[in-house]
Image: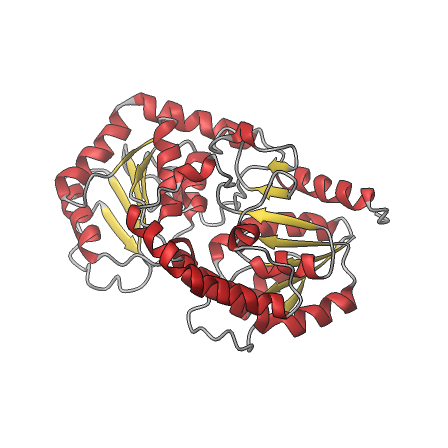
Length: 391
């Protein structure tokens, strides 16, 4: 089987796919993975042929801003159109040379979905967030202001979509592109239990569970309770981190903070608190008793996989959906504010009240019961077999 795979330049959308890519290539299937230079090494290590999408005129400077895609529909549409058109000639030429049996693309790499339509090839969505339909999308709260902005922006959006039509892409509407229906073959990297409104999705949706990396650098547990704090690579709210340090200094708990660059201003740390640019997150979560997280799908899933209750501090609508589902299942509490008192109260609650760890354990069990990369591989092979592709 030959697969053309498209992804956006974001770690949170690339990393979950690599286990499946490796399983497919080790089984003898060929994958051409369209991505960006920053991800070349890990893609090639998974056995795929890397196809560079760098150096094309995307008409936009911050094409990798995945968080803004979720917040700004006009920006998302412009990114979608500019990316599709920038890659059109190259991707069409490569698809002609590869002659893939199927196109797989990240659910936000809409140019892959559009390429499948243009070249009339089978399409599979790789969904590293929750799967969204008209039922589950209610978890992504839209404010009245955002709806008004969307309506006002429709003329601009429609002008952008016409550019695609002019290049031979069969596009009806923005919703037609961004939303998958129940006839769309979709791989979702979570469990049916964690997925909101799971019973509204057809059997074309395969919930394979999160991709969990092996621990490479074990971390020693040095206190009775261990707290892990990470807000991803984007959030640099210095006051939040300072409040966490002040609130937890006297607890005696082991506190591990991963906060990206600019850690130098925290030189006066108490003995029980360590701040790092990055850590082996799997290793830390394997010993943690609580996790303050921005609720990125990967981070939240990793915490819950290890049965760690979460303190939820979402920054985007997509992250808020993860926070809402975690609250709903009783596996975490939302941080009311970044005040020292609220930070300590939330952590004390999830650590001291056993129902939070019990609920996190139920989510963990659901993840571990999923079929993982093996199920997704079998799913893709089954689709190829239906088309008469030799295995």
